[in-house]
Length: 291
Image 1 (cartoon, rainbow, N blue to C red):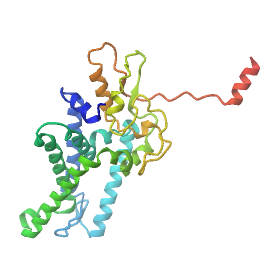
Image 2 (cartoon, rainbow, N blue to C red; image 1 turned 90 degrees about the horizontal axis):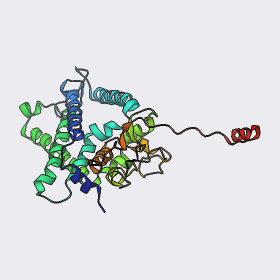
Image 3 (tube, one colour; image 1 turned 30 degrees about the vertical axis):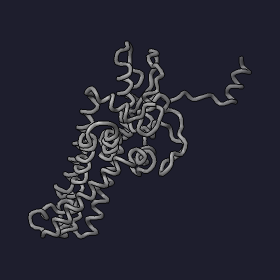
């Protein structure tokens, strides 16, 4: 039986617009992470003690408060995004999710550098984006050999942690343990963009590839149904749409399978239709009595 990494390798034999868009999303996320400390919005300087918040030198406690407030601002921004695009940040902009994608790509045949290279490079980029939050980069100019070595060691250590996360824990983290994902799943609105199954043209061949390629084990053709407790921080009773990362892997796999068949692709991005409300039993009895 084909597994997700195998399906992805087949999908990636040809270029696809989603991979270009995902690369752009990752670049924007990493740029945002770099921008916050480099512009002096907030920085907790463990080397020189030059803690910053809103461009002003503050105490360590003030910088911690500033970091918390900055995080709240990020949450408010993602809340607005979530209102219209559900958990699309999870599937497109989250650097941790991208680690998991490169972890999938590290499986299979081929030279080790080709399988592991993207994962290691992305891990190094993610780790590098977090270093300026904790250390003034002037350390590389004015710091002692020990300070520079400690900074580089911290970067290398975080790189290793990121690579191991992407290679071994992978999507289990997104599925059950990510606190940000839990937040997204709870605040998702009914009219937000998501994966929709529209088989009005009867083009679905029931191959099940979309189910196998879903990184968090959902059934993309049936996201309306409620999900049981999935372990970790997950909450039972939420619809499948709330757990969906809106990554588009199921849509891309459907396009691949039906590439040579006429008709529309049954999986697409859209606003899910809400199930029609069923009349109460008393109302049904009243209607029957009148008729």
